[in-house]
Image (cartoon, rainbow, N blue to C red; front, side):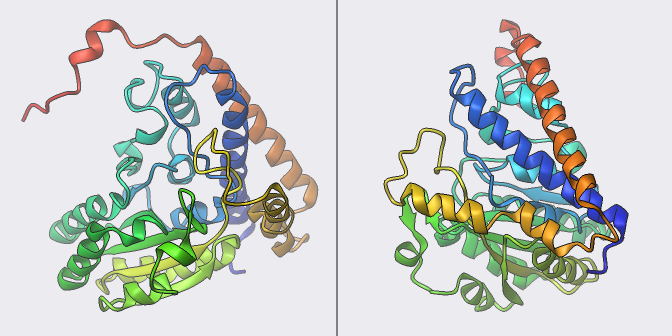
Length: 321
């Protein structure tokens, strides 16, 4: 618990904003006004924030289809994110990406994407660039437990070790790859141990505990930034909603979900770990209220924003060098 008061408040605010953002999207999706699929990050807030609080604005991250939390943790503008999800021209990608493809290179967000296990292959490119330029940059990739089985993930890990790249591989083990349990789909009972077999340090942490994730990420980022090479962090948490909005969740019961919400809430765990002499409960409550108001305002702006003009259909297709 070495974080000062300012750092604690900043971290909680990020987690609170993610929760408010996802809770509101859960409501908005039911209106039918949001195009495409939505995958909510609620229950995993401590992972994204615990990792990204150790990164500089100039560092890069690669995300997943469940990327809203990563975006907010890395500093993406909430108004721009919400507009993007509503398909509006004011969105971070001018309404062309939607929920699963939010990107903002200005804050080091390489992009969410629906390619299972796609982030490590992108992030090692950013890590190789940082090493080649010698600028001290670090990359982090987020991958789910299901994505951890992909061959591209193994190739990226091996390349990172061989080239001693400044990257942190974060495996978010939330128990299910879509509807398939980790205990069935992942042959190795320990995902971190499998990553370690490539020749890098690898640890497993409680992904509902911000401080456990933050401590592990701090060591991994310092190691990467000082030339020590890659590290893998397997963070175990639980997603509160289905794989996607509309998922019937036949693979678990409502009672199981209620139990998770009652006992494995990253925000409640954070609050219980912080000394009241540093931050009072009323201050946390105020942050939660501000987060909800912030997201409400973002939704109002997104609804009022214009859709992309028809002439934009053929822009952003090819890159001009």
